[in-house]
Image (cartoon, rainbow, N blue to C red; front, side, top):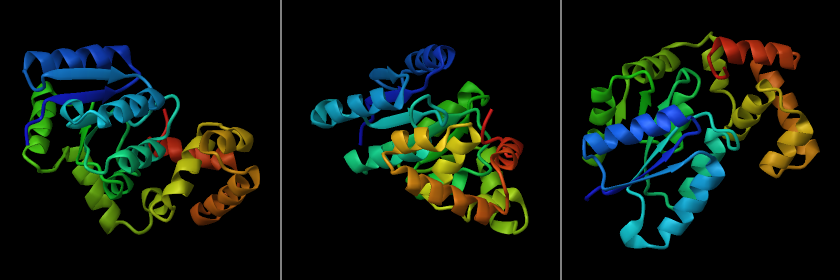
Length: 219
């Protein structure tokens, strides 16, 4: 398979410009599009998906976007086309995320602080149909498999939806706002919130914020 078209999904102008410049310089793709929001990315993907010759061969996505959680975005993307090759490029620690992202179908994970050579190597590996995970991501995978007492392990108890709502709660989003963002009834969000607190053995949002911050899930 020939990889010609890529969509970068990131809301940071410096990353947008820097990554696009790197890909052009290394002649990795013929066409490079950029979206700064999840909504914009979905629109572009839907449009491209109807044009086979112009469809995206790879998506490079940041975890923290202003309008979508990464879980909702990946689920939406996979519902449009399950065959997309997806590389996560993020400044967020992969500790509590990585296994959930793998189950959602990502093909690679690279930190934004990685040298240019590693980013290009990751893309080359994905082009060959292989997976690529940075040393930080691999460490996180191993840590989650061998640990049974840390807060990182506790996050694995949460379903995809619970994890998504947990992130929004940790970022200070009220129940009403979360219900709007995820198109859920307020009572459903409240039930999820109660279940999250029970599974994580915490009593309030302050504790949730603290463990989320400690695990670098939020900035």
